[in-house]
Image (tube, rainbow, N blue to C red; front, side, top):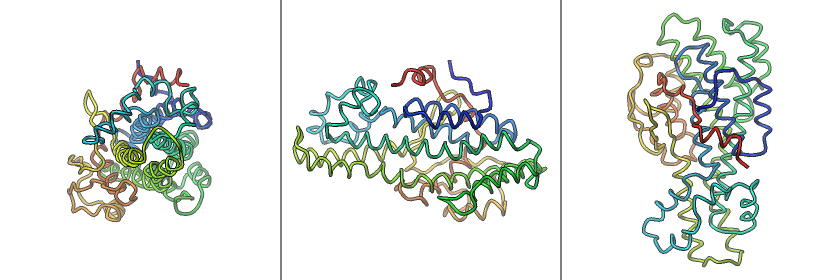
Length: 361
């Protein structure tokens, strides 16, 4: 059965999860915790998706990379015509992934860590994704928990409780400081006191986007490192004696970089009774909810900075996920198109994933 996400996560719980050493268990707990925060925010601001709603599914997707799932399938597709290269690597199976091939905490991970192969890049990418998942949760997830615990639901932007909360945020721009977070949480409060439902949705969207921008600026080093993992791996391999020829090394590293890029540029989200996989390199042709159509100057000013499309345009595919501006362009479309998707509030973990939360080494 899906894990429970009905109780509001506390700051202590966030700190406990963030301190966990095992990246697989930690990611599953982070995903579960985001869902709890999302539901708690939903109770306060209504059914428009909040930032934690999207973070839940981004964290779930990150878990697939952290656990090494689908690496080999994607790698096989990328190899394509390089069938000669696929043959010597076919012995690496999903069984090994389940045994912890890319997890340093497992016996197999410790064993393979000392053997340089092109798959080192997958391990490095997995580690960078885990580091980014933790980095964002430990900061932004914690602030959501603190906000929910200390700021009453009926507070305003000038309420003493909110001013005390805001005083705990670092003054200054991202990536090091937290001005965007302070503005975003004030927007979550402001929308509550708007009579028009469209205006409320617009303030929530603006809050989500400002947190999204802060998040993406914070993640920039981890994203670059994950994409560049094969380049670092190539440096290790060129100095290593091993079972693989120079040509095999070069081709494997090239294919690995393509596979990692593809894995980082997909997001599976619930739609109806199933899931849909969004290719982040493709345009997002999804309708904008009625509530978010029309001019909202306070929102439009921010959107114009990051979305070069004409109104209702859909050309948002990010061909280079390392480019912050391209990522934000896609995120603007994503947050707007799925703002009213009730399916995003679904429990994120299956029974198998919930079991992994306990048994992962």
